[in-house]
Image (tube, rainbow, N blue to C red; front, side, top):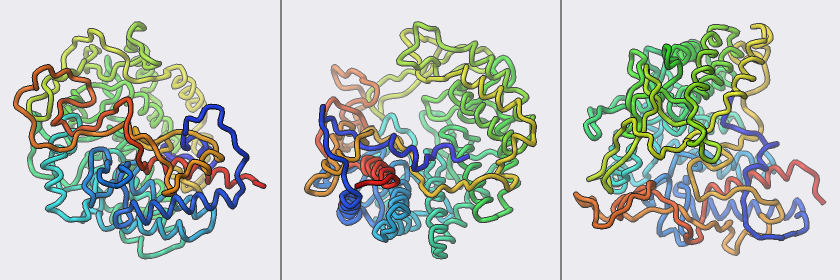
Length: 527
């Protein structure tokens, strides 16, 4: 049920890429792989870490660093591939080697997360080790000027489920607690479980952020962070984590909240003629606006994910009500596929569909920065291209296979019913593609990894994704000749963007991916 995790056997799909055409080398020995892993880890823990925590990427001299946005030197990140993912790969390395170098690194990452845990038990995207005044300053400067990243434009002072921030931290701390049974990590785990239970809405869903903060409007639209949220797998991840808690900690408090959450998820499916699911909802289960570029709409890609979850829920419970309306959703997806001429690189669906009419909704923006710019929605699809890829035929096949199972067959491995294998694998390689970090490198051979660790003991990566340094609030009008390139606006926009080339630097995502490849290689005999 931990759908976004993968185990040791598939870790090889997520390692470092170094483009050396025709390059060949002898397969390294186990001793060479161990030495490479240890060198790279000491560099990360001794030179890069801040109080045991990490962001995503760094210039070699550490003069600039980035998570989803540029970070202060005192900051660590909870979004992948940040501190919890680094903790997980350290635990994987410890599991593979038995070397306490990695266990110590994992405990240091855990201490960084515990230091930044909200009193209510969850986590924000970012922890600032310099304290409250520093993080407020960051939100008022770099955060406020990230035009495209509205979630950073206002400091709520609470915690978030968005981008799995809270659940990834909690999952890592639970795994670390179980690894050696160290009791000092248990209170943080219990606080995280309490956070998920206490934040659950009466409907059974969860908000994006909690506890509720003061009133806030963005470009005239009300704050959306207290609404029922499916966006970024909020409900999916919370249910999966609570199942893990039920199985691993035998905490019966979570059973009813799991059941209530699954029922809510099922009941969020909209009526005909738009029988899909949305990104977020009002308390009466109507699609709602999120960020200003997320209109109140039914979402094809959220619907495809929800169909998979309904099948999972049937396998957990044996309750066929989770299957009852899936044919409607599948038929709807077929009807609203984007026109063939709009398909783009396999992406065959538009992002938003108007409830009740099935009209496609287009989102545009005007202006050049967070001060003078805004997003708006209409039905003008001129030039629009598919944004999401959905294989409806594959969904139909899986639906037919699962629906053919009797309740007894479906639930034979249900952790909700105390059956099946452990949900906590020995090796947890999280987000093998490094989450949202566009600087993280992809697959390469073990021999290349051993030989390409540089003299400073890191795998250098070209940092093509960067951002404009903060230079104050942007102008009230777009600069003369400004042309919107999409990812970023004018020179005052602090949103990240990708260039054709960039400086070489340090990447936590690349470290995670390289280590996962080496850990996978440790499982096979070497000479």
